[in-house]
View 1 (cartoon, rainbow, N blue to C red):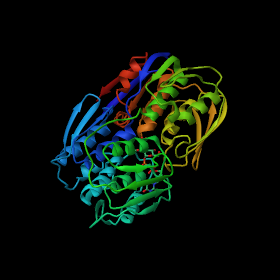
View 2: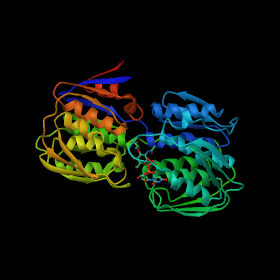
View 3: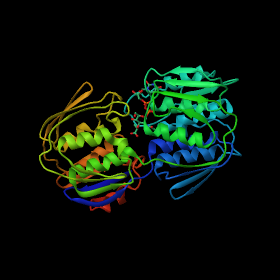
View 4: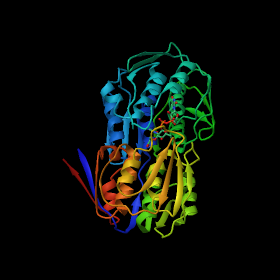
Amino acid sequence: MKLLDIIGGEELTGTIRISGAKNSSVALIPAAILCDEEVTICNVPEISDTDNLCDILKALDVETKRASESIIINPKKMKNIEIKESFSTKLRASYYFMGALLGKYKKAEMYFPGGCSIGARPIDLHLKGFEALGATVKSEGNKYTVEAEELKGANIYLDIASVGATINIMLAAVRAKGKTIIDNAAKEPEIVNVATFLNNMGAKIRGAGTSTIKIEGVDHLHKCFHEVIPDRIEAGTYIIIGALCGKDLKIDNIIPEHIESLLSKLEEIGVKLEIGSDYVIVSKRDNYKSTNIKTLVYPGFPTDLQQPFTTLLTQCNGKSKVTETIWENRFMHVPYLVDMGADVTVKNQTATIMGPTKLKGREVVATDLRAGAAMVAAALVAKGKTRISNVEHILRGYENIVEKLKNVGAKIESLEI
Ligand code: EPZ
């Protein structure tokens, strides 16, 4: 098992360069198989989620070449076979192969996806979208077979503005006959990044980033080159760390517009920010004010930053409230924060935080990806040593996190037992 040992109390200064977005990359890699020719995707982070998706490509005989931050994918010789359960359950985003294989071959066979245990994480909206396009869905236990004689454009209304369902339906529709309209579509920047990739191949997608996406089916998708956008959640995580223990800490290669909700909340509590065109410089200040946040779909406050932000709220004066509206089980970091000395209570979907409290180093667990990030943030300001276990969760979504933090002065070591 992988562990992180962190000695808190250091002032972090210098520059952290943000990597490509995990939640774009994990959709772009499966989307690449829709192409009839070779595609190159650059700025792909080297994290276990992207590695696991490349393993699925290899199992489908898709040629992939990893060259540092780029992946060259050639689906010319691929075969459409069942994706084994051991692959499907490695991560949530494996389900994008359903939409991509259905879109390309009109058939997909795979198992219920994996992912962080932050909720039930159903895929009913994905399957409803596939059925609207003319597919039949058969499920036997954990296995899904989705197939269609023909895929025809349809008008699809999403009951929830689901990121995954929006992208998966887009993947299934780009080569369908006729026009598809996705209403109440999610508007996250990663969706725009995927739509741009598909349009670069010759797809006809309009309206990505708005709640109505229109897709004209096409027959052929050609060679293209594409770039992953910077990871807004990684950026937000390091900016929160800067608010806790930074001194002129520069978070570089970001798109500030993608984290406007976070930046305005940080300014509201009194964090010192210099916001540039593609960077933020952040310094810790004393006497932060308490505030309330409610997680919402984009452009609201992102649920993926709720957990690290909760750590920051333990250092703010007075009572703060965090309401989680997206996932039903996203407070698993709280017991560990309390063990470190924080005053946090959870009732239904709201955490109440009384601050500021002094945090002490403890043995804690990364229960999921972003809870792990909350533990790293807490450990960096706690007195003494914190040991974080189950670090595999963190390494799924934060490229080179140990090196990035060490380079700005953190006392952090990774070890394996
Ligand atoms: C994506 O998950 C992200 N993951 C999540 O980030 C993120 O928290 C989430 O979007 C919300 O922003 C990836 O992009 C790989 P949803 P996704 O479908 O697509 C319900 C991280 O930390 N729902 O937008 O799975 C669902 O239960 C991860 O990087 C259905 O009911 O999220 C949830 O309550 C964690 N039926 C809500 O919608 C469905 O068919 C939003 O889920 C699909 C979703």
